[in-house]
Figure 1 (tube, rainbow, N blue to C red):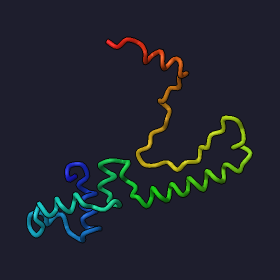
Figure 2 (figure 1 turned 135 degrees about the horizontal axis):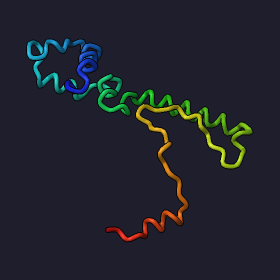
Figure 3 (figure 1 turned 180 degrees about the vertical axis):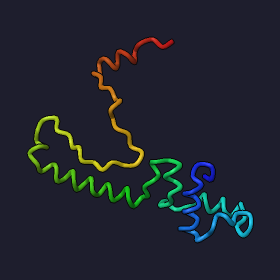
Length: 120
């Protein structure tokens, strides 16, 4: 953590524990600091710096799910949703999500034929 996001870790220690990380080794023992760092809450900035998917806590993910559900229900009542092959495009983007631009579609028969090819 200290190597990947020292500034975020310093801010999180100040925010959640009201401890100054500069006191590490003086008034804060290294083992205690390691324990506190490993148990930072979901809202800590450090987690998002280590893994972008973790930059949202459970509360933000739940709010995004609620917003998506309400948006989808509203969309199902529109004329646009009644078209054949209609797709809802209003989902709230989540941190760490990648667009599906690199996904290739394939007919099931062709995929089965490719999977049946001998492997070397």
